[in-house]
Image (cartoon, rainbow, N blue to C red; front, side, top):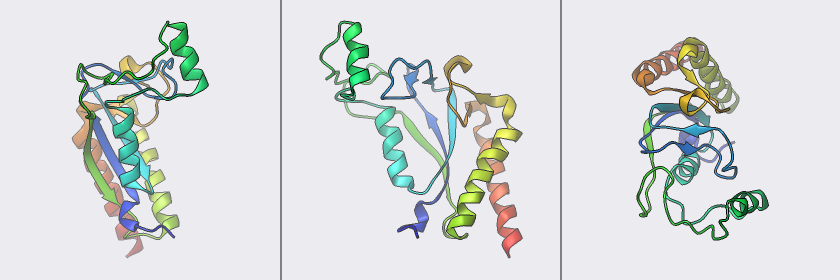
Length: 173
């Protein structure tokens, strides 16, 4: 059983970076970028922990990961000091992030662990189907990211998530 059932749920994030940022911090060569015109739909069992991961990826970093592939990537560009002390999403050198938590709804309190997991997965699949024409693969629709959508659909997606969960609640009552 999970320690904090409030942490199990579904979230929607938006981003406010000036420049698109790499989706994989540990793969700076990736063609997948996230921009301020995108939102992310996700599910989690540990909401607080997951948000910290996003804030680290999409914000100021004192240094890049010291992994062999990352070191090699920058070395080929003539960069040996990975202590950048900057944000790739804006011009700031102060600690901050570009993640805005638009929505979170816990499913862990209303449903069993297994049912919450099924509902959270079902929400992602349902939103993917209903909003498939608004789904993006990355900045300029290039890349391989999943569960990212046009920011213009933010309120519509939140409304659909709420309706989906409310229907599931009715089914178990």
